[in-house]
Length: 291
Image (cartoon, rainbow, N blue to C red):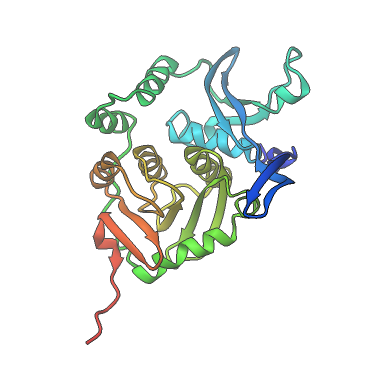
């Protein structure tokens, strides 16, 4: 199982001919766009196999995405439970399709409760999901509240993260069309950044990287995400044991509820030298007031 082999396929961006308009008229030029393609994740155990999900993603780090997805959903809890991850080589698939289907092979004689898993995805795609149901599901999967650790981070460190993460977003700089998830040490040192058209995919890739590199659980780390801080991102952070989640945009009400329930420090609007703390303020050291 190699994360590097998932990056061998080119095509994270595509060139397209476009028209641009300004005060001098219209101009034909070539624009670089981020690639968006479907990825089917299949789980295999012994002679059994089942499709877990189909997600639209940016090609690259596909094995990390698969590992992070399986770990975030508690289908696997350690590397010992995984035999390997590979692209599908089924004869009925074209060469291009094979790079859009990933097999996750687990060390078991039979598949886990896929029916429960499918019900979860039906729920999360609907508008009427109940916050209590989300919390109950995480608790059923064994996700526990983060302990009252001694981690303390200066607010100046938090405020410095967006510029550091932005500098590592190579594809975003060229296309402007990607979300990112960046992981930092408690002193603000960048550990890894992953980009994708989907916020959840970017975080799954990051968690998958940590899984493959034997870095889980991610205690004493800070996660920075682009876009809105949804409850799904908080849930994934809780599974990976990330104590601080910062977003450059707003959190949802359910994201705040989950952060409080599972002991996660949640910050929003981390940009332009300011931030809001919605939960877990005990981990943040404020800037001393000047007289």
